[in-house]
Image 1: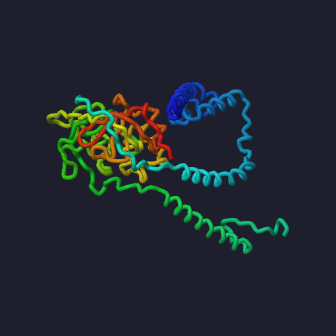
Image 2: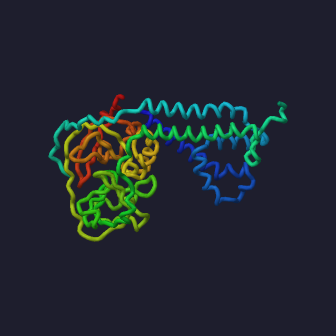
Image 3: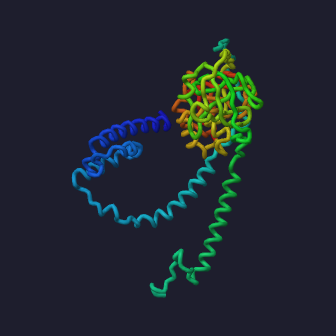
Length: 125
Length: 254
């Protein structure tokens, strides 16, 4: 299995779990953590794509909210301490990616002559 | 200088005098930097080639027989001034999507298709209009078409998506286009192999799995990279179809 096959498999498993989470959360879960969702159904299908992508976060927040452990104020705590380093790291990363990309370029195999290995079988569709 | 006297730039206030020189230097520097970066990066890119949407032709409507390779192609039976009978067109929908689901019920049948031509070299694609306007069953005799086997070949080149390669994006190939090509192929746009040199008169060929099925998942790892591979080649109308052998796929060094 190469990287592409692994990514496809991962995406399928991730999406399948996400679909299960979406089904359960949107039918029985959402009303338990958000009283405004009680009796409101039309908007729920709109949440499916998001839940498919970030279902672990949905499960985590569902658990936190349902268990009464939510600290709503922490969501507004600024996270500026990392910004300084990220501001430097991003342009450096962009330059590195460009340099690496240009240095790792392949050369178009213009000299390669197509080779017929075996003649055509006498078969026609 | 105390903390209160330190000049502070606020976009909607007049620029502090002590910062004007610095601001001018940075502004000119950033413009020059981007100009230089554009020149350097642009000069390293390959020529995207003569390709693109032919909106200047207007919408083209032709009749033909749908074949699934498994990617849908149209063998034109009744053309127009631009697309002659005998021409073979790859088919795609708008955006990053193919027309497999729309074409499958018409496999082997006569249909009328309508859309915008994308053209590159010897290979053409038609981006179908939506719904019945783009593809609908047609009445008439359905001719039978032969597939001409051309044997097993070893080729060098690159796997691309047929739509971007044909000019939906410029450049529509290469490593920088890998992610876009993967998305197009996942959404059933026909994949195309670009050969290093012409094979049976064509640089481009539709590429499928060895069994005539879809491009195997493992091949997505090599999209946009220069590779060698072997496969069974066949001619359908005026396009070639390569059934790649995944076991033979190798990345070219350098």
